[in-house]
Length: 208
Ligand SMILES: NC(=O)c1ccc[n+]([C@@H]2O[C@H](COP(=O)([O-])OP(=O)(O)OC[C@H]3O[C@@H](n4cnc5c(N)ncnc54)[C@H](OP(=O)(O)O)[C@@H]3O)[C@@H](O)[C@H]2O)c1
Image (cartoon, rainbow, N blue to C red; front, side):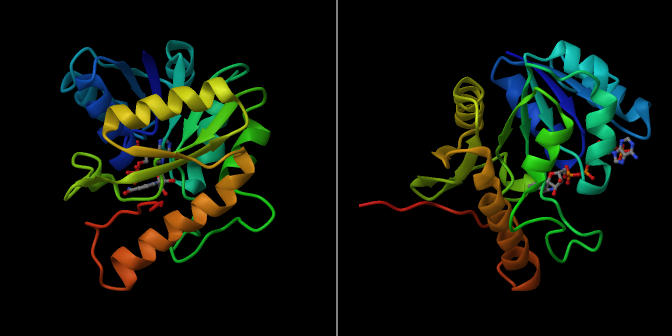
């Protein structure tokens, strides 16, 4: 699958590297320093780099992995996203990363969907630190990722891309469930960095 990645930092670069090893074609974009993107692309098999609008045109899927403060600029720079599958992993944090800047009766995902007009937005991959992505195995279990979205086909593709990373994937229903998934992302940050658990932690839905 062709994946255009907007935001090539901790999350975007790691996701792209892993997906490239699983046979996907990736395109990195969005940096203050385009030479960094070129360097990254040259280190990943078959990868390319360019502008967010080129990434959006390239991708059958667009992966948005930007800090909340730059997300709306990144969406704007992507141009026309009508009909595109837009997977996004943002946690809409305040600038000091201490809490969520949006929540309650909306979410980062829903705010993104308002601006990315016509895109099929899916929330995914935001509830653990990027350093976990290279090894999602916890003993006998895989870490879970929690996905939600209003378009079934887009969500199915996000589920498959999550499995390609090594996640077990929990379908959390419509995009409005991002209000709770982003809360879980915030809880991960608190547990890992404020409450002493460290970043080698992940969430798992247990069933019986
Ligand atoms: N890091 C994690 O462990 C983690 C885990 C789960 C979810 N998330 C969420 O995922 C999102 C991305 O996090 P991250 O840690 O990957 O962020 P990051 O490492 O800071 O990467 C952000 C990307 O945006 C680019 N960028 C920043 N400002 C820009 C600007 N003004 N113009 C153009 N490009 C700009 C950066 O490029 P340059 O720096 O090269 O300019 C970089 O490619 C966030 O919403 C975060 O909450 C992060």
